[in-house]
Amino acid sequence: MTNPLQVKQLGLIEYEAAHKIQEQLWTRSGEPWLLLLEHPSVYTQGVRIRPENILVDPKTLDIPIINTNRGGDITYHGPGQLVAYVIVDVEIRKEAIANHVHALEQIVIDTLIASGLDDAKRLPGFPGVWIDERKIAAVGVRVARGRSMHGFALNVSPDLKNFSAIVPCGLTNKSVTSMAAEGVPATIDFLSKQIITRVANHWTGGAFTISSENRDFVSF
Image 1 (cartoon, rainbow, N blue to C red):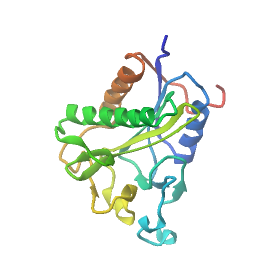
Image 2 (tube, rainbow, N blue to C red):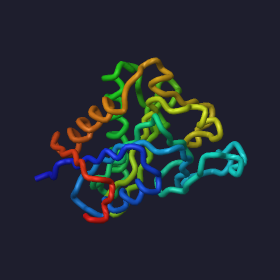
Image 3 (cartoon, rainbow, N blue to C red):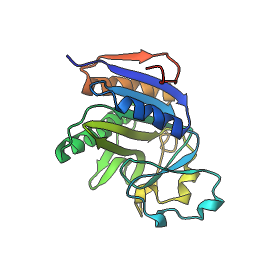
């Protein structure tokens, strides 16, 4: 019998603190988890980072740059961006990992369509979710020892100017957008409910529990 999806809504939380929680939950094989949150402004570098994709001297930035173990290049996280970390069992096969990324993208696409963005789509050859050639959600994962970390970041109403210091996800000649910029206002709360339902439907047959515990996982 599949365990129900366990959901933690962490609000605004520093990237490093959320990453520690991910690492703790990643060790709990067989338990599907969803963390929903926002980060204070931060740039995160994936394992495929190219230094030239930071367009300014990092010393001049007011926003920190943090190295991560996810796939991909550099991106921005900040208030107004809904981040979903999906921590589930995934087979260590190229096809299984590709299917995992595909599922995350589809969850975002379905959520955006339900919110009124009917043209949300994949862009062949480019991970994430797009409106025409404008990226509205980034997807980046790490799969190791049969378990996933990280997930996706949906631009609801972040300050898009913060993307101008980088080449987001290392993709030249592509721009970023948000639900607000596309004229489709939505709240983090509304979108979180949509995402919880869709993640649970995909991984646990619709079963989920939402925890009201505080964010300290040390007691687990």
